[in-house]
Length: 159
View 1 (cartoon, rainbow, N blue to C red):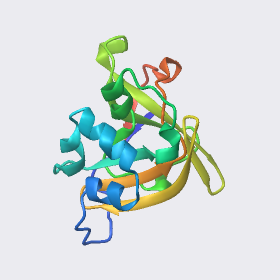
View 2 (cartoon, rainbow, N blue to C red):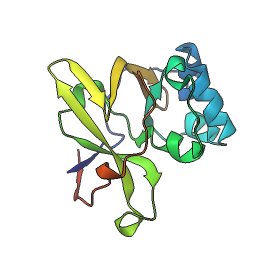
View 3 (cartoon, rainbow, N blue to C red):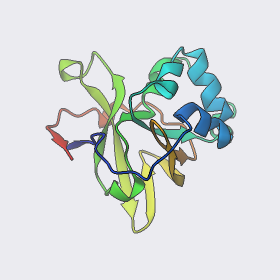
View 4 (tube, helix red, strand yellow):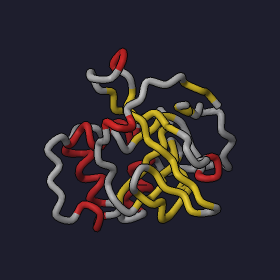
């Protein structure tokens, strides 16, 4: 089951900083720089809500990203997803759609949870629920590599 979180999650207000400003404030400058290089800055500054699984600067050390835009799209999921809503085995839609998937469907992110420990694919969430005016940043300890094994044709479930 792929979970699609809508933007109706109730969050404390006001959050005056957008995702870009929050990422910079959290010193995730490598991720922001890569977003800029891939001409995806509007995802960070626009009105749409996203949850970003943002790797630390150290996570990018020595990494060559040949498919930069695709790799970065894989770190975004539509809507605002609090870490408390992430259950073990949940699949989240990413912004990355691949033509090799049924109907050009979305690549998914698989959540794992053991008590208060939460991760996505093979990355651990190290600092959760960093709020912005247009989304939430979940800091992870490594970048998410594309994994076609998670590209399953499953029914979608909206929360």
